[in-house]
Figure 1 (spheres, rainbow, N blue to C red):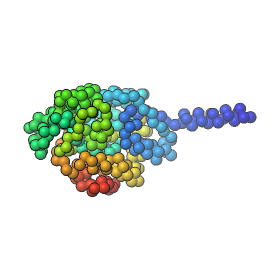
Figure 2 (spheres, rainbow, N blue to C red):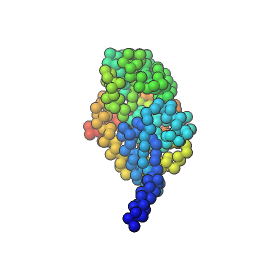
Figure 3 (cartoon, helix red, strand yellow):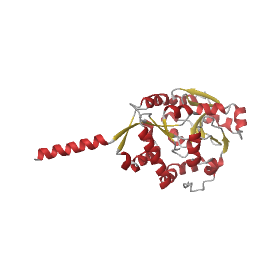
Figure 4 (cartoon, one colour):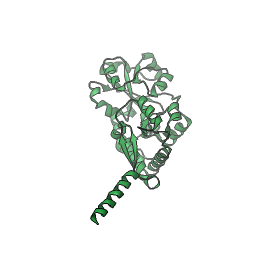
Length: 294
């Protein structure tokens, strides 16, 4: 009798495990505040879509991420900045994960280069100073920066940009303010520093992108993130992860340089209008740096 009971329990456990959807996500997600939002979205939609768990891939370039996402076999979910091509070939989840902070950019620099930034008060000054920006070859930001007449150099291996900057092969590694603390703590960033005077802005969110053969997952995440917004979880998440960082960077003390994003699709622009924080809202945050959901 005990043998049959054990077998029955084993079968139930096996069925429960097989019923849990395994979502293959990019490596970086497990070290990002975005993970909490994804887990929340999966949790609040479990009644309608079933149990799900995340497993993480090995580190890879954005070009490789896109390639694997398109097939949907080895990768199901990634966090990427949108452009028109990505929105056409993948399934975007139209929700700015850090309320659009990715588009607020500060410069990681070689400290010896700080003087080049001292006299910049507007975009025309930046262009006149011939500031050269380093970016990853597959990043949508390259198109945005060049469309605003800024000088950009690229490398297909983003990790090499730190050493290039250290060698002063370019002047500015433009990073989202939600990324900068993590990257300054990397061993590769040793000897580099945060430029102290400027804040670039262009409308550019970090969004979830899903493999085309996983439309149910895309719908599920969209619903879950909208629930996070309505429930107040998103506001609490923003304050928890970014309030101190905004205060530390001193956004209100920096000169704001506004750029256009010609690759912003109507759907992404609408999501930004609904969910993202504007430059005016960011700079007006009080000393407690709380950001309540409108």
